Amino acid sequence: MLAFFDRLFKKSSIEVEAIDPMKKFLIVGLGNIGPKYTETRHNIGFKVVDAFAKAQETSFETAKLGDIATTKVKGKTVFILKPNTFMNLSGKAVRYWLQQEKIPIENLLVITDDLNLEFGTIRVKAKGSDGGHNGLKDIQIQLNTTKYNRFRFGISDQFSKGRQVDYVLGEWNDQEVAALPERLDKSSDVIASFISAGLNNTMNAFNGK
Image (cartoon, rainbow, N blue to C red; front, side, top):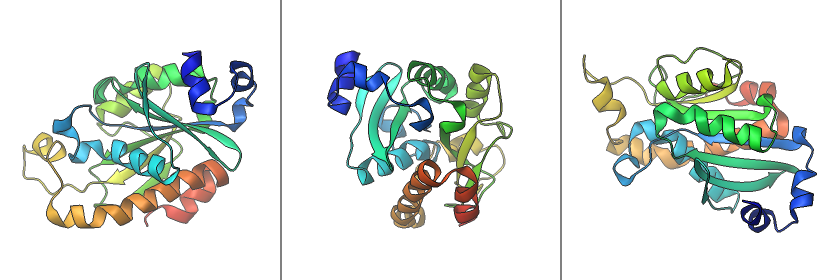
């Protein structure tokens, strides 16, 4: 594990441990692993962090409980996580990496899909219920709190009665595919703002955009 972080940071393990915890952030995209889920609406969390990692010119490596990448934003060390536990057990990976890197919970941002928002709509919040989302529900259980930052990406609710699961685990339609690149660029800006400008400034700048 130390060799893994030496490669990521090109520093000694002593230097890695010396990072001020308040300058360390954990950005988590929720999704399901495996190629059959890659282009599904439920995997937008993975897509957003993939876009952010690409913008930061960093890449993921497989580590404990997920794929992880690191980068620096305004002098702050950022861990980007895609849990490999499947959506419904996401909390285990989130808790592990918060504890492993001694990251304060106020520096956690969880990115997930939201049926209650129109496609592409952004909503960043400091706390809230799981809203029936099993990934958020497990994080709440594992962290024993609802007070963690979340970034909800709207996927809309254009499905007929009884077809919610099919819709959420279905692939984007042609209009959504065409619009996604701009929305992913905007989402990367949201993450960078959260890290550099803080939660309140980010909510004011991006919510509803």
